[in-house]
Length: 256
Image (cartoon, rainbow, N blue to C red; front, side, top):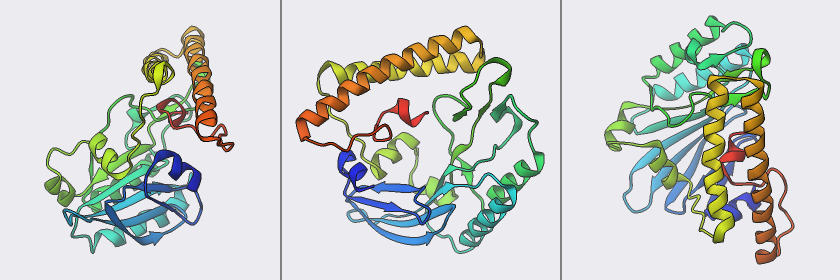
């Protein structure tokens, strides 16, 4: 994790007990770990200049409904004492409503009801999103294709009152500074191709045919080529040898 922290350029990094939830935090925040559990990591963040306090809960929920019940219970227990801005986000491994899934087996309404009950009981509001409605694709096409929206962000009333006009993009910039400088045509090309990949991905979501899948694969192959050039640039610049397939910080690889 320290390698990622150094590359991103942030001062602090926290990981949960299962090593599946990582938080990269700006130096302007004092960090206190409140809960460190298998399915969630909760931090208290205090801004050193404004002294605004924020509770951040990051999720990586289990696939099994029974195991998630334990997670929902901890969320409910935290809400009973919550009096400050609270941001809850991550992979909940369950959808909110049927339109957030395309293909595959029928939606389990019992799992959906569990999710909605606990979120509503905790007085949390969906903060919305930008981009595709789906955050997971099983990599297949046509009748075998499955899309789901498993990643979400919620906030309590105090969060919305404190951060008037809150946009997730702006909050992300505060909590995790992914400020990537522009280094020549390679980086500009990657930025452009990321948008092209998103367009083709959306086309495939709407119409998951073999032709649309092939087009998506072509632009994915193109961006991978430029990412390899980017890695070579950093090897020569910094003399680092720790770049691996998972060490890439682009919207394309985050979406895979």
